[in-house]
Length: 369
Image (cartoon, rainbow, N blue to C red; front, side):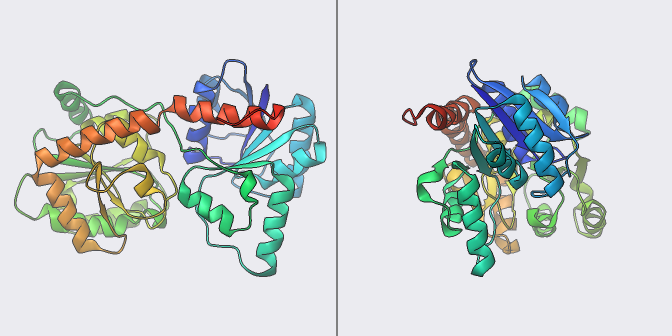
């Protein structure tokens, strides 16, 4: 079976990492061709994961463009895939319908406001017309799709899955902290996320300033990622108490040392679907502090693998940061349960097997596992 995966992102985002994990764990009898915009950051990683990568003259980070439809139709006619699977590319699904001869799938990677009015109904009708199956990576995404008018028979829940990391031992943690310039001792919280408004770093920094000034072990915050808010957030940290304990690590190809250096993970976004960074933290055996939005509570379990807060609740977030910093037994209990839940539900092998099964169902009509 040949699958053409179309990724519209130019950056290293969740959709690209999702595709990388699938390509590295797909069934041996599945041939994967990945069509990307020229110069896309994920091209090399997808090649190393086993995909044949084709860089096309596409408009990057754009869902629909008439020119892209023509380019992708040529690509589809050239490679003759059994399945076209799009990630942020409506153009790809339209091109597949025009080319014929293949099934179309897309993955709902982000949550969106409900569609309304005539335009909303028209968009739903188009989606149903050009799509044979939609993968929802969380129940929150599944609900979002059904609210938008997608045919329920076309919506399949397949949780994200990743290869993940192993929990760091004392020596590995020590080396990771040395490499990142973090003093030994104290407690380290890590947030791996784009520095964009939806990730809510401003509130996190304000809550951290409160928590860092409290009694108990000294607390350091690692912010791994880059984005449009990098300079404003650095300026804010410099003004806040404890701002010297906030380390901006920038975008990193290898995030394993960040998780190895951390005692717990934190993500206080305004909106999330099924964030891969939460799964990465779980795989590393880290407890977490998460905002209770989207699919977060499907990945983690409150008071079992993580503590939860609300995106606007600075006081609650500060208290939870301090609770995780002060209580090693709590961190140990939550982290062990997080690792066990990852192994049971969110491995790349489980995710890839279910995705392969959906492809086979579409192409051959066999039962979906």
